[in-house]
Image (cartoon, rainbow, N blue to C red; front, side):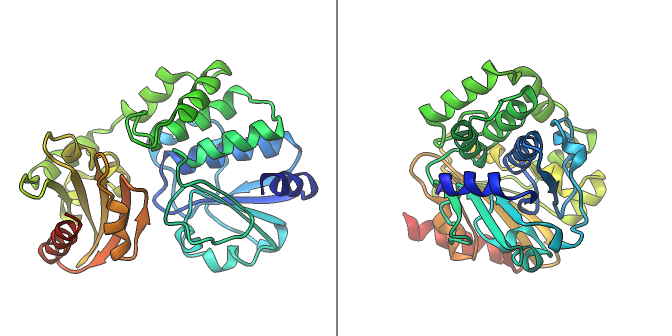
Length: 317
C-alpha cells in the first residue's frame, strides 16, 4: 500500500491536506510535515482545516500556510485525510472533500472504519506522525529541520510526552532520528506545554472546582461549562490537557473531561491507565479513538450523562 501511495505522489501534481476538527498536535504536525515534503517535491499543495490553529501550535513551521476556505475542489487531484477514522471528522466540508478523485487516509485510530482503500493504517502506532515518518523514510525524503520539528511535535503530543502505552521502541527511535536531524525537544516542549495564557489558568481553576473522585469505580472527572469558558475569557482550545489532571490521581484508572458544547450537549474526552480500554466506552456512544485515549459526544444534561458513563464503566468491570 505504501508503494501505491508513493506512486500516486510521484504521478499527481495537486494535493489537498486536511484533518479533523478540534485540532491537536498530531493532526497539525502531520499536516505541516506532509505539506513541506510535497512542496519540496515541487507539488501544488494546500492545507485546509475547518478550525483555526490553536495558539500554542502556531510556532510550528509553515503553520501560517493553513487556510480555512476550501475553494474549488476540482483543482485537487488527491486529498490526504490525516489522523481521521471517519471522513465526517473533517467537518462541514466532508462531502465535498469526499468527491476528490483520489483519497488517501493516514491514521492510527483503532476505530478506523476504512474510509479509503488507499491508506496507511496501524492501530499500534503512536501517532499519525510516526506513520508519516515511516512513509518519508521509504520515499527517501530529505528530512529538513522544519519537517522533523513538525513530526516530533506530532509524536510528542500523541504520546503524552512519551508517557502513554502507545510509546514503543519504534516511536522512540523515530523521535531520536528526528532530533538527530534538527528537531529541538526543549524548544518544542516549551512552546507546546509551557506557553499557557492567563485565560487557560483561570479556566482550569474553575474546572478544578468540579473535580469528582470515585475511588470505588476508579473514575475521576472534570466539567467545563460554557459559563466557565465565558467567565474565564477562554475558548475550547484552552481545555487541552485538562483530562490529564484527574488521570494523574493515584488509584484512578479512568479520567473523563466533560466539555459543554451547547445546552444539553457535551464532548467527552476519556483517558485510562494500563489495560483499561476507554475506546470501548466511547464506541457505545458513537465515538472512538484508542484503548487509553478516546472521545465521544453525548446529548443530555451533565448528571444523566455521568450516570451513563458510570454504568458503562461498571459493565466493563
